[in-house]
Image 1 (cartoon, rainbow, N blue to C red):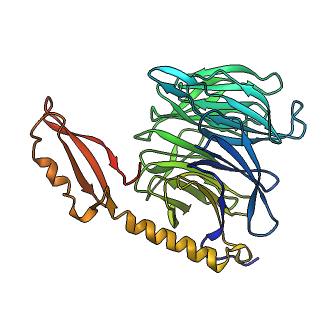
Image 2 (cartoon, rainbow, N blue to C red):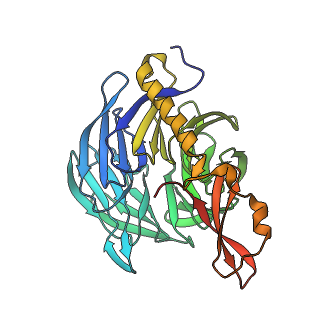
Image 3 (tube, rainbow, N blue to C red):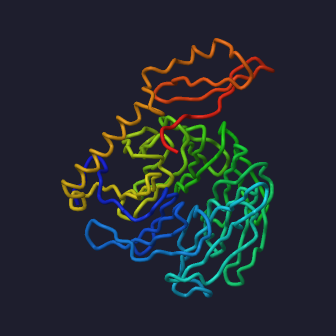
Length: 385
């Protein structure tokens, strides 16, 4: 079958009412997405280029962070979808507990409780156990037949952002403590170090090991022996998500509003988006699905027969062009009129004084710290709420 040189828009999945936080590919060719609108959606292919949301799963009380497919097992002969959510804490009091929901069709048939903070990643082991990662610094292992937690893996010093089940039954976990841990029989047997900031995502690289990424904007290929085989750089901000295509190419999604494809250690394609790319997924045919903060999921393809129609592609390109123009202003101020980092050479006139400066194509706010006589970075300034 003929392929295009680069992935291009296949379709847009429209329906969520807030950020789409994750996307996963199901074995039957469907997609499942989660969102800050508190819903999980299952999208079926129409047999051509488009996907339609045939199921809207309503039951989470707060934002939904991730979802995966549970293959058929004794407790769920037809399989199921598992989704996990955020906790909601106000003034130190938990308003909504984080839970893992088990869905059959559009019904919740089981709820797993135990984590005390947001559950942000799920994986199924080779033996059919569920593994979950949480901001409570733990990884939990669950028996889905009894719906009981069989082990709580402790060792990370900060939030655990990602878990990955290996083919040999071992588990990998990536954390805000900048490390990746290998767990065998629920015991930590190795700690991988090298990332200089939070580790946000892990993905299996068959035959070689695994890949990792995070807030340091680097993508690293590791052997299971602990060696970093390759480091890839190109993103301009935090990298939130990873997937590996059937071809072995790596796909990443970032705060810099791009989805990128990597081949032999080099970035070979950058797909711009209208917002942060929170999630990516590899489809069996080599297509790429993305989850974006603009409330949309999208699918990109190299198959000419699956390309979006000319009108949809034109609308997509117009939206990206408008987004690029909007990005040239922040809070009504033109980026070109903001001072550069040299403005931070001048001390503030009082404690807490603020200053916005331009760093490349982004704006950052700083606050004057009179005790230490320095400017402390508050964060990136964006135009929206």
